[in-house]
Image (cartoon, rainbow over all chains, first blue to last red; front, side, top):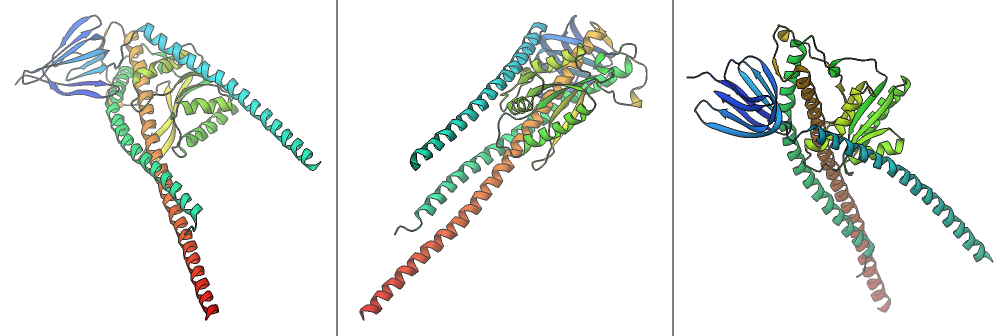
Length: 139
Length: 287
């Protein structure tokens, strides 16, 4: 029997594949890589693309990853798959959006203070009105 | 016979309330189970990535990433995870109480604080007490996605990179079991490498393209996955707390209905007795 290694493909939201394999192919950032058992320790980023796992019974499994990391140890291979399409610009846009939302939340605070102010004024007006009514009733 | 009409309507309205709380309890129970599944599904990723980081911390001593360097603490950042909706017992208030204790301790040490809130309840809380919110995300729903968190986490990581904060903490409700959820404050940055003698032999990875780049994208993902886990834990806690709160509400409604029913029966009985005694009295007067 040919040598095998243990392969895990995981994303932050779920475990995608776990089991023995003879070969693993992935599209790393510097080009396609093929991993066999007893590979030297290796760490690289992955491009969006497919990860191909050849199981001991010769079956080929395909998984699409939208980027991520590939860690290789002599007898284990780990694919840390991204769940989202990542790019510097996209991350930047997401960060800006989060900041904007915070600003909006803080603006709402001003609105809330106004609301509280208005409520106090309203309560005062109501109290004055009822006092006037009582005075009129007495007459 | 119009005895205790008010009591009857009251019983009816309490019964309707009970129906609602019971339905909410069941919905929360099923959502909790799903959230628990999600919790266990997200665990392997964080574990694997943690392993790789520990390898890196031990194998590559000549380069130390900023996220792993301990600095003098002058400013602290918090990522506070809370629920979007209420009716979940004391879940959020317990968390905020813990937060207030933490903030008081920081005030004493004259530390500046920055907050990133995930969930609308947290935003509301810091709005009220006047915290410095730098990023905010909300309405994640029942199936939160990592993609929704990238933005706010990046804001905090950028702040750490620029030296605007020297420490980053994650605040969330840890799901222990259905009955217990503990508010937890966890340090995210700087990362303290595990002491593991087994890893202390000399080997290193081959990096593509470069150790520094690989390391920072790995660490970013690690932090994100921890925050994601916190969000999922908090979601499970929220549903569990809601389930328990709604269960006790249904039970209370049941007790209330029993009491009201008793009062109603007594009133009805009294009315009948009175009527009979009137008839008997009337008959006695005639004879």
